[in-house]
Image (cartoon, rainbow, N blue to C red; front, side, top):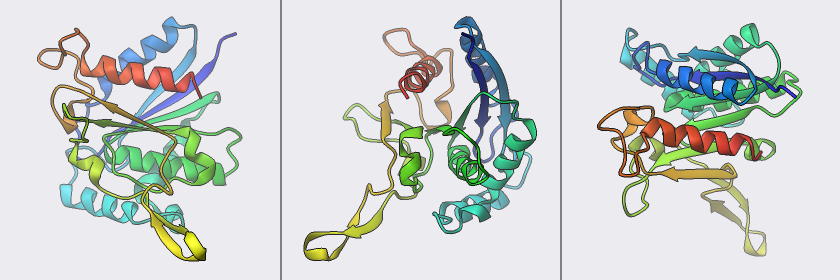
Length: 228
C-alpha cells in the first residue's frame, strides 16, 4: 500500500534561499524509491538572508519565550502553520526544521493540533533551540544534535532554550525538573563541521566511513519516522 506524505522543511534565520534544496531533493527521492507518494515543501518562517538579521532574531527570541501559554502568539509558528494549512494535501505530516526552523515547527504542530488536525504531526528539530514539548506530543518529536568526540553537544544553538518545568517533589514540595518537557527521542550525531553543516553532502563533509553529514541526518530521520 502506497503511503502519502507531506513533508515541510523549515530553515532557520539568515539562511540562503537554496539552503535546504539539495536535502529536499534527496529526501523526496528516498520517499519515492520506497514506494511512497510525497509532497515536499521548503519554507522560511523567519525569512532568508535577504531580510534584516535583527528582525529575525527578535522574532526567534519572542518565540523561544512563548512556552505553552503564548504559543498561539509564536510569529514563526503562526507563519509555518498558515503555510501548511494553505498547501497541505493530506497524508502523514512531517516537519523537519533546522535551527529556529525547528522551533517554528513545534509551534506550528501545536497550532495544527489545536485546530483539529486528526493525526500527530511528526517534528524533527535539527541543531535547534530547546523548547517545551507538551506531554501529548512528546513521542512525535525528535531532536538531532551534533556532538564532539567526548559525546558532548557541541552545537551552541542546541544549548539555547529549556525543557525545564516545575513538578511536585518529595513531601509535596515543588522541584525544578530540567527535562520535564523534553521529547522522548534525542539523537546525538557526529558530523564534520558545525551548526550550518548538517546538510552538507560533499568533501570535506564526509566521515571516515564514507558517510556525508546529509546521509547521516537522513538515515536518523528515516529510521525514526518508521519506528513511531
